[in-house]
Length: 116
Image 1 (cartoon, helix red, strand yellow):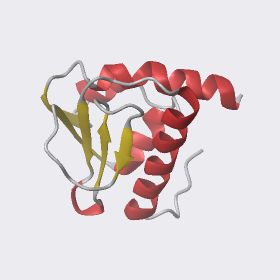
Image 2: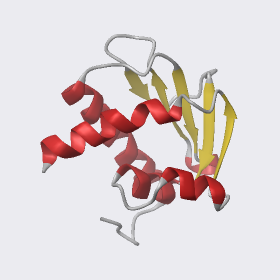
Image 3: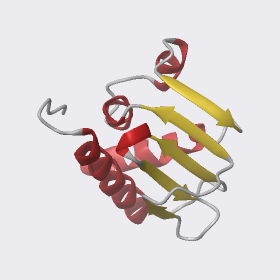
C-alpha cells in the first residue's frame, strides 16, 4: 500500500481522508483530543470529544500528541507496522495520555473489516 512517490504532505492528506472515512463509517468516538504531528509536513487532529468526531489538519491543543513520520503512520493505519514496535524502535514519540492513541485501534480495525 506504500507509494514511494508520494510526498509527506500528500501522505498527510491520505491519512486525513482515511481517518475521516473511518470515523464516518464506524461512528463512535475516542473520548479525547488526539494530534498526530508530522513536523514540516503538518498534522492531523482528531477531536474525539465531539460526536461525531471531527478530523482536520489544524494544530490545536490535545490530550495526547504523537510525533511520527507520515509514512510510518500510513503503514500503521494499513496494519503494516505495529504501533508498539514502532514506539520501541523510536519511530514515534508520545506526549500526554499514552492510552488515547490506543483507542483509535478498534475504529481502524472495524473500518478495515468493512473495506475487505
